[in-house]
Length: 93
Length: 432
Image (tube, rainbow over all chains, first blue to last red; front, side, top):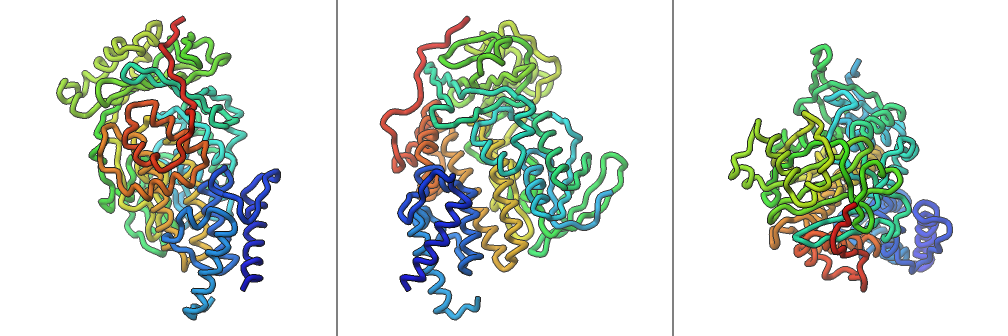
């Protein structure tokens, strides 16, 4: 489970480093994405698209609150919880 | 010839419609844009804040806009109830300036960009209410003003960028006038005169290229206000007045222009700025009850962008930025809907909510009177947290510039309040 969470976190970190942040900014699991200019509204929309495609989860608007997206670590947690919930419900992917 | 089918039909070729058309064409979609006027055509809304550039970069229009050399502006100056306050964009970390743009030229650049990106653009075509709009797309009846021909365009998605007309929301009776913003706006253009710059210094318009202007706003009575926006060869001057006050004064029709000029020659500040300025004959225009909201900014088969998705109040120059932001978001999400049709309703709901929250935040900043209906405060605070600290401070300062801040403070109470705000109280303007 932990390794699954680590893999998820690493993919998210890769995406943010590549797509959203300038190269000189250091992004770690606990970097606050909302305090600076890291994740604007468009970056946020693209991140959600990435997560849906990459991890095959559906994030409905109720989940899209800032608290869930404050750091890459939290996002990874959210993704794992929903991937797990989807599997338990037997939703085919 | 307008085709019978396309992937995406865009109604309207202002900055929002042209941006969405350009982005979707760049993604490889077959896009048809129908515009009722022929560019260049004039519209009001000449002030653009630096947030614009972030979206201009994504749309790919930055170079064309820079090449035009529109006037840069430093920030805003507000004379409200006897207080003169000023803010500069550079205090908020912006490295690129705001602008004052001639909208006929500015919008033409956007429409050219849509065309160059591969969208098929047809001008002087009027679109009527859709005859069909559902999850599989929409049918748009149209008629050409050039040759009187008519037809119908079928699209897998419809993007409504029809501005104030907001034709899809109107056809579905989902366009509602905002009862807290019932104003008439009257504007016109002047040649010559003076303008306000940094430090409250007043300059003749001949200095505009050397000394950047500051957009100047001043209060009129309890809830009215005026704008003064110098452009390259003329100055846009406008009044925003409560509907009631004009009615009480019996100002209508033919008297409107006379009333406008009397106000420009007698209001404090404006009369001095315009002392040596000449009115451009026939340039006055007016619009009333322009603030409206829509029930939902997206639904099966459609997205509403720019002013068509709701319009609040022009006081903070947000119109063009909201246009390019909503166009960028909607273009991305339409692309997603094509890719993941099973998720389409979720993307539409997300866009609707995002748009509604943005408009509510802008609305809270602009509300003319305290304690009007503000919507869900928690949602607005949430949205504030999606902005950087500098951006949140900018909201604070903007709310403090006018006395329209009391509503906003309720939201900001839970957000970061900086120790010292980048907002200068100026004793008075320094007349040359």
